[in-house]
Image (cartoon, rainbow, N blue to C red):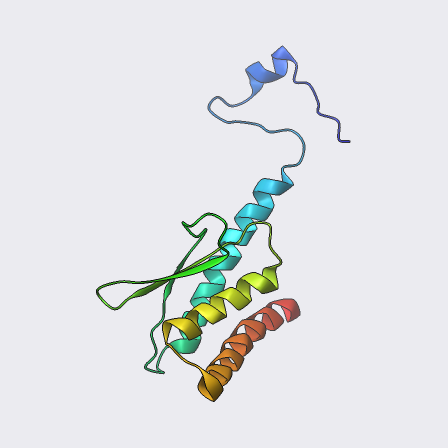
Length: 135
């Protein structure tokens, strides 16, 4: 258990006004922020992989509006598609798999074409993370 330090009245008076100081660690907030950024980055990488292939690139959002669903897909009148994916409290690879399946479903692909697209999308995601590990 972490100990939270008390701030003396004199310390409060010397601190900058308008700033909120949180003592201790807030890992939940940090991990949630990190997940949101990673989700956005994954969507960007998938978009780059799909670009130029005459495929529909869905927009992504989180969480799905339907309670209890991990992934949903909505087709709009203008032809656009929105894939909603649950990010919180899930294994990251499952989130990525749902995003990839969302791209496949948005394009109504099946069979060998879907398998090829899945492989391309996984390579796009893995290539970027491998480059970051090296750097």
